[in-house]
Length: 305
Image (cartoon, rainbow, N blue to C red):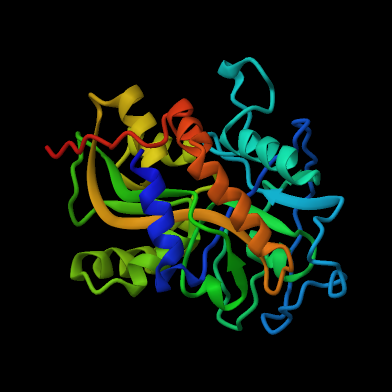
């Protein structure tokens, strides 16, 4: 399985020092919604609040997991026959069996993935929930980034992916195209890129402000289907969109070699144990089977018209 050597190589590489962003699910499949509120956090507050003296040789009885609902990782997959089934649920079930810990998940549809404010705070984000001590773990929908590594720690990579634009064949890509995304990380990636085309897209998105962001993948693809929009998203969603609307949409690759992972509080004493268990899931084939089960690894067929 190609995923195993990639994960191990990333784990051993220096670039594997940090990793970032999205939530998880409890072994019994229950979730709790939390009303929207801002998390004004201090990025210097890096030691796990309230857990400074935990014994790192033994897993805690309960691990608090926050996630933002996502149809590919952490949302209910009704087609699977169980309300709360999915890639994340299966990973957490495996971790519960190996560690004896109870992974209690909280759904946070009110939170973005993670974009720092100009003043350095991370209000309204999953990363903010970690820094503020509200969660121990958020996960695998987060992308490992250098800016996130300054305030949280990452697990070993869970899933590599590429980044794509999805746009309407009727309109194509032109100077009138509106670029939109769900993930704050994509916006930041375009800003840091040395590619002149991606820099130009970033400037247009920044000028548009909040209009450059959507609240869900469904909203993003709806805008593309009905107007001159280009939606920026990762492979799993793009693959699904092309399967459903392939005759209407076209795609263009805009970035590669990203990885999804779990994020934890800075200094979380159980990170090494978490990494060990995740590597075991890779080595025994469990992770590859789950990736295949949820069709997360097949490459996107790029269509340019």
